[in-house]
Image 1 (tube, rainbow, N blue to C red):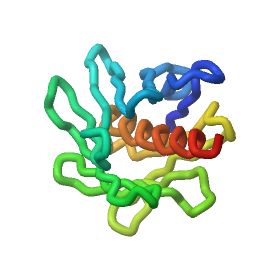
Image 2 (cartoon, rainbow, N blue to C red; image 1 turned 135 degrees about the vertical axis):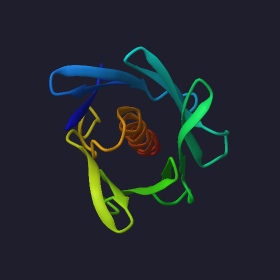
Image 3 (cartoon, rainbow, N blue to C red; image 1 turned 90 degrees about the vertical axis):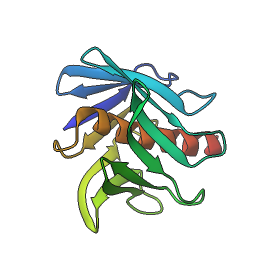
Image 4 (cartoon, rainbow, N blue to C red; image 1 turned 45 degrees about the vertical axis):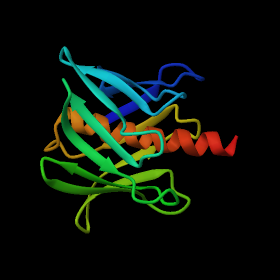
Length: 153
């Protein structure tokens, strides 16, 4: 299981850990939904395809590794494609701060906020997904939590 924690209270930077070992840091920029992270010396880009687009991506050196489509502005849900394999990432319920990753109708993982202010979350995603894809899915959830927090303040 991974954990994600904000580096400072008002920061938009989060560290992702595997136990006590830091894996990477990701940023949820307030100006636009884009960023990058480094895994084992390789830089990965995450972002939104366009200002008004519901399409998000994970890429390395300009090559698209995964994409996520947010089909509705009114639902907290993404359809994710990784190498032709489809997943759904959606809020567990209307009030829940937990997101579930599903393959078909089967729940295969979750990201659960353990602190109201996003100071910490538990990331339980299958190890069959590459680490960069697990970080991408986590980043998508952080984007949604940030949107929610910004709209309620």
